[in-house]
Image (tube, rainbow, N blue to C red; front, side):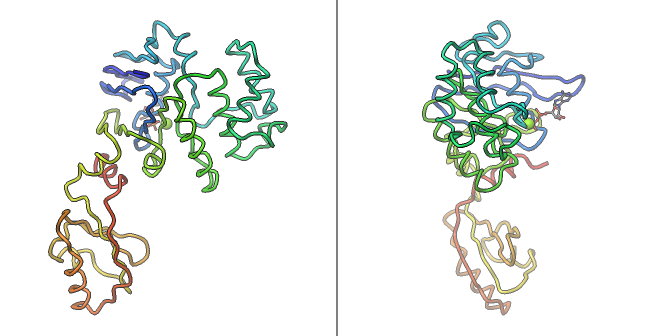
Length: 302
Ligand code: ADP
Ligand code: MG
């Protein structure tokens, strides 16, 4: 096992940020740690990277206990903290060399070169960090996390605040890194998990509410089939719920409705019948498997 968390509880004063949390992450896995804001994701990651001690319970990384063998843990773990704190006045190479020094690496220049290459910083390597776009700063953060060639990467919301192009690039980079490393990444974005991860651990209010592969989680839902219907004008939700077989109706974009129904119960003929009765035109009708997003909403509904 690359990571184990065993009955971890963390109190900030009287506030319980983590409540008896246990999970394991195997070598080579890429796991999404998913939860709404305030769920306890960053707290868990700080415990795994020895930045915070747990109030109760224990954690290991590559077999080393975070409390009794923190130097060994730090050697084996690369950490990209939330908000990626960087020294904006330093040059990219200067900063990476500085981090290599902290790790006591001997072949510093060689490691800096390798990281610049690995994360695609070639054209930006001679700039100050403050001159870089957010996407390139994240690359610097990833290079910093990997410079000592750790087995495990812990990335706290690595794509937050990126524009759509940067998002795609950084996700691709993380996915690629996941071929060599064990990766635990936190996010509150479900699509991110679907795009990058083999497995998802969902945390809510300090408690694990799901721990499964993405596909198993999806099929956990009883009503897991969604039909996307676009009408030519607005419709009331309660009318849609009268369509036989429709168990849930949720507004999509524009005049699109997402209708949930049981698997094996094709409601499309009934939807057409409904449209005819209401004098509506059906502009689009599309079956979609209920996404992980829905499972997430259901599990973390307050
Ligand atoms: P997430 O990363 O999932 O958004 P956090 O781990 O940052 O969640 O926070 C979990 C809970 O602990 C939140 O309610 C947060 O307000 C609280 N918390 C986090 N850090 C501190 C701290 N240093 N002192 C007090 N409360 C904190
Ligand atoms: Mg956080």
